[in-house]
Image (cartoon, rainbow, N blue to C red; front, top):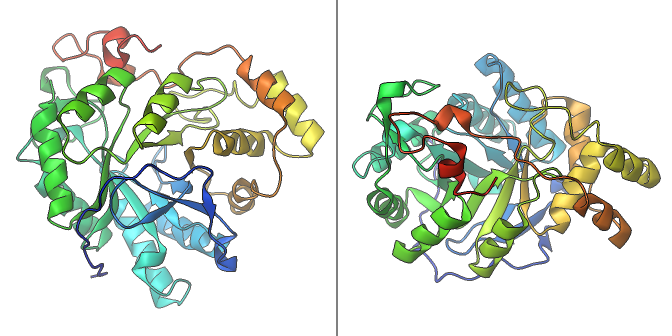
Length: 346
């Protein structure tokens, strides 16, 4: 069992922007940001472990070890991804090999699945996650999607008859309990629109520390990012390159002439331009590459910057949501249309 000492919640303070740089050479000076509660500073680049199609656990474990060697100190997982156990195994082996000296060197984010998104299911759901990770506390625990399904159901896609509306206040109270019990350092949400976030802020005792959502040059989320900054919430961007290679993603980011032009002028790759752009928005990013060289490339974005002209060109890219969330729509569920799921933020 990997042990972490629990710390009582601190008074909320907004994330500091610009982000402070960690000077530890082994971590390649990856900036960290202090979240609005808890005592952990979150590295702003995380390695994602959602793999489509799935790969063997041993491959994920080996990737985690390789990523730690490359300098990654933040890993993003979820019950839905089925990667919690190999992630925990990888961190445990990295500790045994002396690649990291303590569990505190690594920041882990996981997510509450819809089947556990019930007031009496949150703490047991996190307990299962901690068992998978071989940890006593997680750094950040997020509500994965703003809806529930029948308790104990873990199928994906969710079956038509299993969709349920979420008891937002009851579930959030249980999330707060996870922090009060010392099971989670910080709590937050994922895939929450401005409206859903405002509704949650109105009833929360502990505000969400993070809202993890799709952000990339084709879906820039300025309104949501501004709202989060106003409320001391850090936005973490998933699909920063457009979810290339997944059943729901596309190549439109890599094929964008504007980004190709900027990358060429900077002597950088398009992924590096996208990640640097996100960093300059004052947000965190979740990258996903198991390739050793691309892993290193994705961390090499902190010793150069984009110009005002570059930002102006990127702002001009036509906007549309890439991750539509259609698997979470149902005639029998709380969201029958994308308009309802995203509260008109399309």
